Length: 397
Image (spheres, one colour):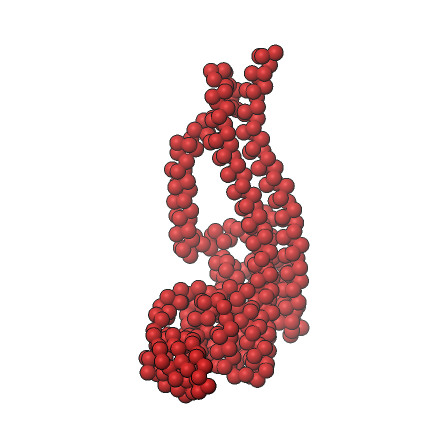
């Protein structure tokens, strides 16, 4: 199969251009003739190899895609035509190529879920499983509405994580840049003014640090880059990744925040899967993959094995010790009442509100802390300059 770019003329004389997937140019031309179009120029774009880099859809992109499909399917438009309309109106080149590939798979007689499985590592298992459930029930438009709502909530949670993580990183970067500028540009200018005078210890330390940065700055930056690369490669090892992800959850305050995030995402994902007829074991497996934490994923896998042997879900989660006792109690109540999916959905939305509250609290703590650290770093450097200046001034009086 190849992707072809074509120019054609319709019966009304108007020129039409676009792209399409076909086995060969003749098949593409034949398909266009069936639509009443005469193709006068066609060429293979070679996008099939370059367009797909196994990049999963972002929650924002998935939400927009699902919302469009929900509207089109709800209007009675068939899936294949709905995908074609989405593909024509899509501005994102990557998603456009993905939709084109999906349409090609549907034209072979495959279902939408089967077509998504064919395009490996792009569509999340959660999305595919939900669509499978929708195909079985015949309520595809309702499934896509639920998917759109889910990914919008996922994007919102992701945004709150970014606020907590990015803000301190920006302040830290600004602090380091300001300190390096003062040590390597401002401080050397004052050294010439001081001449041969006896300098205090703090000034001598700052001068030595500035000289080190000037002479070995690139070496230090390169060394830090190598360490980052080693860490990145080490994270590809499953055992190391599990330990690191488990360690993150043990960090005071920040660990509580991420634990809350993972609890909310698990509750919302697991409840959505159960509500649409996906089995408990498969739902646990999919929810573990969705969370993005290898430590919790392993624990949920162990819980799934325990449930498979007949243990209650709440007991297996309690033994895993990955969620709070209050959440495990909620699961136990849901099991006893027989409405686990509804209770978990309500709990997930409650935890979303808690995430907002805790994110604000962490930001409120980090902001003054980072400002104090930044002020302290700059203050020490300024002090190392001002002390000799005051000493020179006192000698002149």
